[in-house]
Length: 195
Ligand code: IMP
Image 1 (cartoon, protein in one colour):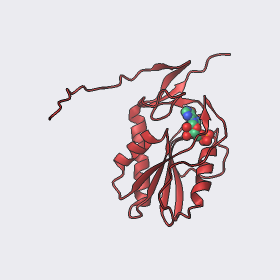
Image 2: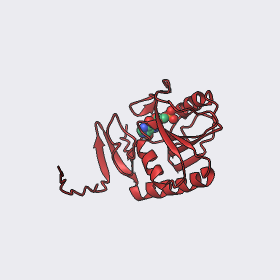
Image 3: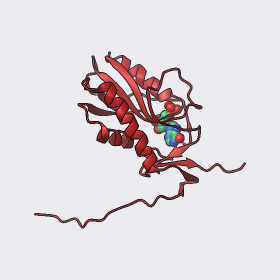
């Protein structure tokens, strides 16, 4: 049986303002700029890892979007897997990180690249790196879609960053506010209300 799905093109109209739950956000980085930044980052990673068959480790849930966009642009032999950690509730990092869930690959001797949606305080990345080093990889580096240098509290170098942003809460391109906003193309920044 052949099922015909009527083509139904869906295009997001870039909205300058959106509301998610109780908060309002404004467009901060349009989709085209996010894409250009991911193009550049893919080029960096290709130059560094071509011929090394890297294993990309995407950190769920937020990195699914970045991981997919990056993979589409990486024309080298590579593998990807995903892990899950939980550290975030509401609009500020709790600093508490639970264990790594879902890592089934052998990492010994592999070149591992951790894919993060955003590095904020860096607690999550620190925890993941500590856990990964126990598996004796050949190398571990970090690639983040977004990095907030003003919020960063760790000393580990974030090797590859698509976009550096100020210390504001953002959503879109995989990032959420209590479950909403991950599917928005581009990046939206919280509109702060006057006290
Ligand atoms: P960190 O441990 O403080 O670096 O935070 C890492 C995690 O917190 C990210 O993977 C996100 O899930 C979440 N996070 C940090 N900042 C934001 C933000 O501005 N918007 C949405 N989620 C964020």
